[in-house]
Image 1 (tube, rainbow, N blue to C red):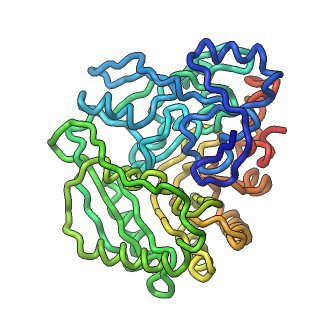
Image 2: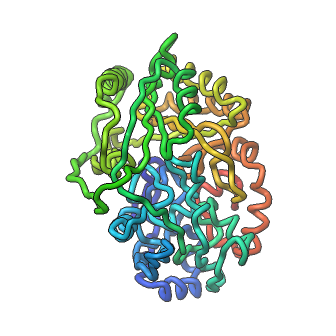
Length: 437
């Protein structure tokens, strides 16, 4: 069948396996030669080709909740459980996910494989910093328990390892106790990039922080943005939220998103937030998952899909480097429809985890011929400033760029060879980046 990531580029023809139980997954490895190399896949929310292979093994039926201690806030669940399902179970008990991405449709297994980050990395780190342990099914059919104390190498390689070490069966996670799921949001207008980054630095005590950025603004307005700061309210309802969703039923025409429509959109967003009341009280759903209210929003980019270019640069060079990238993007014929700037705290010890101390900027580009030379040009700026790209969003990074930016890749390969000597777990991304053959 045809499969693709959330960016809808690239697409592949693959054999999709959907075993209904853990036991049936284990049995598959007795016939792995029949299926050939494979890659695990959760909800399919990675953007590029990290969960694409000739054979794809879905974890969607590993969706059970196994244990939940409402006193300690420790939960054990299957890798196929979604963030939305997790929130539905834990919110009534006064708990919240320690880290949330921009969508609640990500699976727990995918969150570990990508070591996802949220709007609170500067205060709470990435998702795997709150994972106590997980069960990992190896290509041999053996299931091992992994934590920072038990099978530590496997833990550090699997967290952020994009599914290349084995199949995550279940995980035990430490949750956050919260007084309310209502969010007190304060939105601040920033006139340019320096103003925005100054405001981010000045408000580091806010639990959650991100900035929407107008990547088409030029000159004195380069990097103009709206910074959204948030903390949980002191009290309020403890109920999961589900909004009525709009839907994009089909791919829009190729001309729908262009430089002119993007500019109109950016101007409208900037002017709207300039006149919004501050602070405001909102439900967690609208703050953390604004795009989830538009089902299949990825279709807005047309049938050829889009590419997201998310990078991090260290604090020492981030201002100069991000300014240079914004100048290149604003002067190009291709503009990003959605651009988000956040600050990261310190890196963890996971070998291929993306976050490191500095700033991360995510840019979306419609898939068209002009975008590839543009992104190659951005790669040069990125490496010159010591940055790297996010594997969960990548669909075209070169092997040279990857290996220059991820210094622990050789150690990762050593551990993978120990865990997966038959090289069973392979993705199109891992072959492109030289992690597997």
